[in-house]
Image: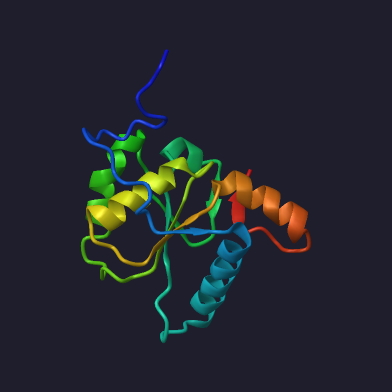
Length: 151
């Protein structure tokens, strides 16, 4: 069956995927998470920690997630928008927000929503999602400990 969207998002008109924040390469993502973890452990207050959002559905998050990540805990992707509005309502528009999903499609849509509908100005997403992160880390930095924790 032919579908009009790869991932159903519930929008009548599509968001502009070209305006969806920074597409962060996996090794840069890894480094940012390591730095955030170290700052969090040391209690460093001079730089804001990024808000790391897991854009996958709840059953996917149960398998594993990145350290410091906040799951959206949605049953369906189209439920993400209300959760994002609520979760980020008191967050400054320039706060660093990092998003990820399995293969990179859902976080593009989430970031387009964050920039175009919510006015967030400092958003990035894991290029290629968890799949790309795992492959890149194994091929290019095998000695590094993965920041993705799960089964």
